[in-house]
Amino acid sequence: MYVTCVRGHDSRIIWYLPNRLSACAVSIRWIYGVPMKLSQFDLNLLVALDALLTEKNVTRAGLRIHLSQSATSAALARLRNSFQDQLLVRVGGKMVLTPVAQGLVKPVRNLLHQAQATIATRARFDPKTSRRRFSVAVSDYATTVFMADALRNIQHLAPHLTFELIPTSERAVEALEAGTLDFLIAPAVFASKIHPKMPLFEDKHTVIAWTRNRGVGSKLSLEKYLSLGHVVVHVGEGAGPNFDELFLRRLKYKRRAEVVAHSFDVVPHLVVGTNRIATVATRLARKYAKFLPLKLVSLPVHVPPMTEVLQWHNFHDRDPSYVWFRGVLRDHQHR
Image (cartoon, rainbow, N blue to C red; front, side, top):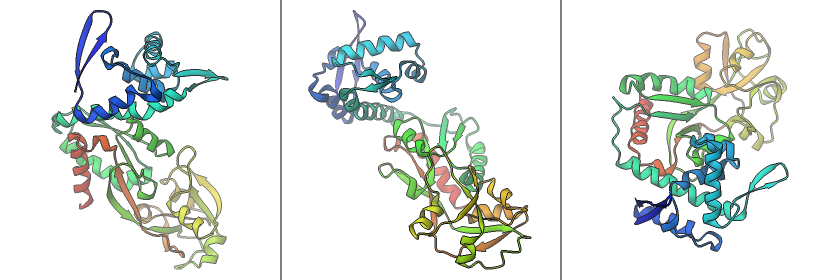
């Protein structure tokens, strides 16, 4: 589908939208009954519109798309004129989306994702020369037991690629949806249900204790396990229960948390020299037991195996760089 756009007063640009983008474009034309003439709409404004809908703030939207505040304000004025709606209005001390703007969030984001995916699908990717940057939301646990080794291997295969490892949180799935995050690594139960994913590895849970903790022998009864002080982990802003806590709560078991940490990697250190225990992933426990005075004891309650998955936005499913990265991690599973 070809669309003629007016930019300024006399310059005209011809845009090509692949057929699979047409549905999104049509939905934008008729949001809440507002007729949109694509022949009179600058499609460059869609990027600004997406930023404004996401940030709900002119200054932050400008920073997001590298525009000055005045240029972003001008873009908002043009968008308001095009949609015949205020889009953003001040309520109390903050800006909120109008009903029309709320209805635009998903179709605008989908259209931009699909456009990006279409371009990426046709682009070539050479790992030996590419300077692409990947952002990956991943816990320190998954980094320690999996990603650190994978990234060492990737450096040999693609020496110019760069990676930003972002702590996992509830916002990670939102960032994946918004297209600001390339990949998410998390337990399958916490991954998005609407985007593709692939399993990376499976792990179980183990109790760890200081080797000189006399209250912990080679076995632990459930009663003893619940009576001891625990080191537990809460990861990320507004974090819910971790994998093991999720299943313990379902069984109505409550641990006595004496120390709450925000990192899995610090937990073994917080157990040493105390009579506290912790429940951690077995791979992590075995790794730290190699150089810390720790003993590993079986968990006295059944917690199912945990599958860590790699997830990406469905619009990037055929992006050659994403396909390559997934393949490298898939190969790394079997090392």
